[in-house]
Amino acid sequence: MELDIQAHKQKKGQTVHTANKKDKIRTRNLDIFYGNFHAIKDITMTIKENTITAFIGPSGSGKSTLLRIFNRMNDYIDNFAMNGEVFIDGENIYDPHIRVEELRKKVGMVFQKPNPFPKSIYENVAYGLKIQGIRDKDLIEERVVESLKQATLWNEVNDDLDRQALSLSGGQQQRLCIARTLAVKPSILLMDEPTSALDPISTGKLEDLIYELKKNYTIVIVTHNMQQAGRVSDLTAFLYMGGLEEYDKTNKIFTNPEKERTQRYITGRFG
Image (cartoon, rainbow, N blue to C red; front, side):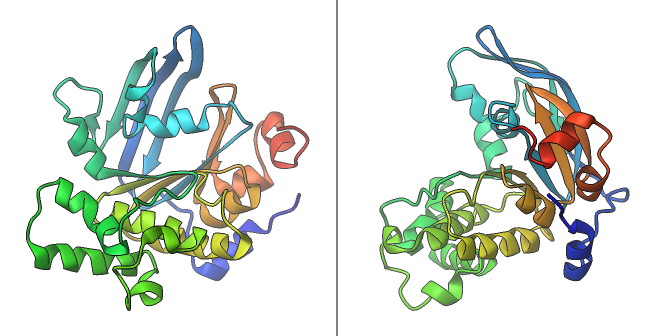
């Protein structure tokens, strides 16, 4: 498989230089267990602010497990245990004093399948604000409009915000879910296979959106789609059997990886 990644990024004006950016997420000697199963093995990595990092690897390699550690979604899984440290903005998010609900305001999550609530478009986006106790109707309306515009959905729905969200197309529903996440002003967006249930046109729109969102957010995306990782990400982490096999600038991973196993995976010889 040949990917002209660098040409694509130059065309879109994307840079892969991260040296001057601050550390946004950092793990140190991270191990994750589900009972006796060792799901993540001694991962130490840094993710810079306002970058897009793709997690790739075969099914079962630990991509989603590692992603969910950043907003502590793994806390809900039976027999979950971890060793090591996870820092966001220099703060250990597993420190006992951390309020998880505050963490999840900072770290938004978009799932594999669109999951709008059975409410209106407006109420879907306003939901998180109301849960936070915001009652100012003008502020809520301002955030709803701003978030729908950020998610490039405003022009398609602005004439009927009372419309049922479930009546939207799959691609529109996924962008609505992104708008709902953006409304509470996170600084990090986690995306777990966000286009896997979408058609190619909707996928293209969502990839363009992800690229635009990088200006204001740090994004981590799990994807099985090698072309997608090449198109949207600045850096790529290849996970294999719970370990971090290789982590570097996307262009290097796809054109000149250091590990033979990485080369075999990205060229489709296993996975």
